[in-house]
Image (tube, rainbow, N blue to C red; front, side, top):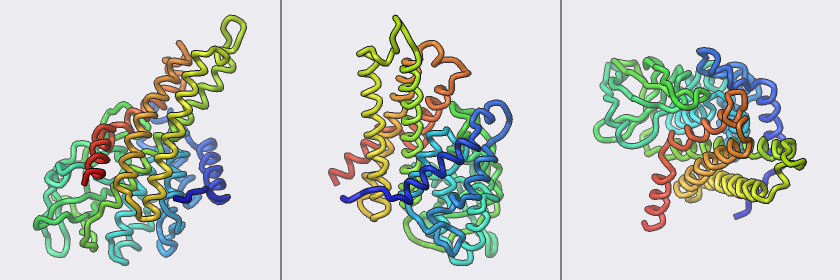
Length: 352
């Protein structure tokens, strides 16, 4: 496998970092009733990053999973309070399964950031929770989805349901989305109530595993970015913080902990970049994204927890941003299946 980043990838990383530095305000979601960091969202839209993986015919950037993963990683470093991963997976679903007319109609406002998309993925429970029925040329959806990660700001939902025993994908803008209180308010989850909700059936009639795979890779990239930022904060703090007349970073026990954190961050990045490569090359993406999700989210929780401990008392204060990273890590670890679930998927894939 040959995988190397280009100058364009480095420029994209820099662009995302600059946008986050200038616009990201994750604490605002704790201080207000906001469900999305609108300033950052608008900046991503203006930079053309909300549709970076879509064809240029639909105002996209014509890029692919590698570029999408780099954006998600950068947003994770800043605890960006925007549903980039979910929005991207939803737009990719429409691009993959929609007719040309549906793509033009749905994708343009999504790429421009005028609408925010959420996506329902997961186990078979979601397939039986929503009941579609025909209403002339349209469809109506009934049911309740109790938990949709990072969908509190969604104005459009992309979701699967069973039609005559087949999995079909629908788009609706008529769901009643209710925000939920979760551990991480920077990616607020939601429940969706569907009562005769007007919906449109996407034209493509074929299996769609791509959306779930991409979403797992992007969520893992967010986790890897959050872990890297927590490590950077901690290594800087251990140089500034003195005990016994020396920086605490000179003490062997602290060095060992920092080294372990670095190994975890690098392993996470490797797994995430491997998943992006697999998606881009149509390789064994199922195994790669499961590995990325299990490794990156597990390590993010460990690294963020270690960062809190190495900061000492200040690490558990509200004023220290580390709790934002720990919350993000825990939310990502549980949003799309636990690490143990994904490890079982890897084992099943290897034994198949």
